[in-house]
Image (spheres, rainbow, N blue to C red):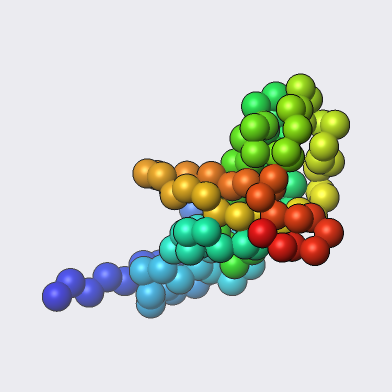
Length: 119
C-alpha cells in the first residue's frame, strides 16, 4: 500500500496554502476534473459550451466534462451549420451514445425530444 500526501504551495512566497489528504481531492475554489464517465445510454441535460463546424460541445453535469454532439446527431434532418440549431449557453438534452478512450464522450440530441425528453 502506498500513502500519498500532496501540498499546495505558493510559488512566490513558499507558503503552504492547503494540504490535500486525498489524491482525488481538489483545493477549495477549484473545480474537480472529470470523474467517472456518465453511464452509457443515459439521458442528461447539459449546456452548449462551444460550437464548431463539425458539431457542438455540451458541458455535462456532475463534473463529467464536455461531450461532442456531431453535426449528424444534432437533429433528424441534415444540418449544414450547427449555429442554425443550437446557441452557446443553451440548455439541451443529450443521450450518451458512445464512450471512447481518453474520456471522449459522444452524445446525440436527435434521439431525445428536446421538449419532453422522451427517447
